[in-house]
Image 1: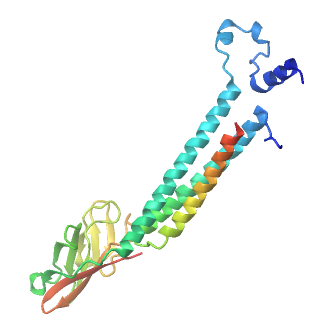
Image 2: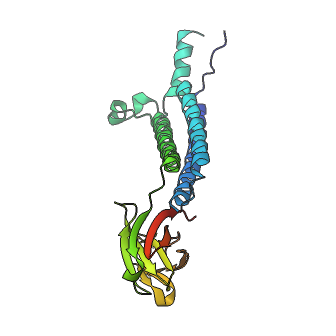
Image 3: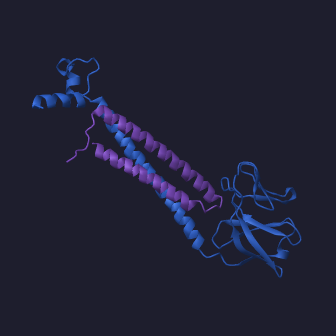
Length: 74
Length: 187
């Protein structure tokens, strides 16, 4: 039976820093997406709302996956 | 591995080394009483920040979903019905009148630009919602709050801070009566 690898603290610190960088990047992308969509929506262009909502949900799904990995790390 | 070896490894992995690198027994009493593990503290704070950022990500996703739902519902909403808003003789050329379309909406502005030409727009400036006033002689609508200007014929911003056009009300003139028939979406 295979066991999950146990990382020493320095390794876990590196992993959590990398995850934090990825999550922050994705959140910045979502912020840009929301700003651009809101601008288009208020300007009367409502066609972009659905595709950008799907993209934002995909980003959130990625973040959830990273969070799940974070919980498995401990 | 024996018990002592395991304990030694755990100490190496999970205990912070004091700043002066002396053993804990030689440290001052305050440090022995409160041996803050700074590395562990940093790890926990980073981990908590990741959780908070994921929560922020969820909030953005909910915001996007709300916008998408609103745009889908707006597509399915029935168009506002045709509404008489003024008579042709009521307004001189260059004159203006406010009205509400559909009923209960924000104020709209009807402007007579010629003998048989009328235009109507939402009266709220698309910058910060101040009421715009017609400047028919200049062919513009003026927002005095921040000196914003819109083209009278199209409603598009021509100067000042506004970036988006004024929502345009579709009109129909029939037997001396001016009707509002819909709202044009202007991208």
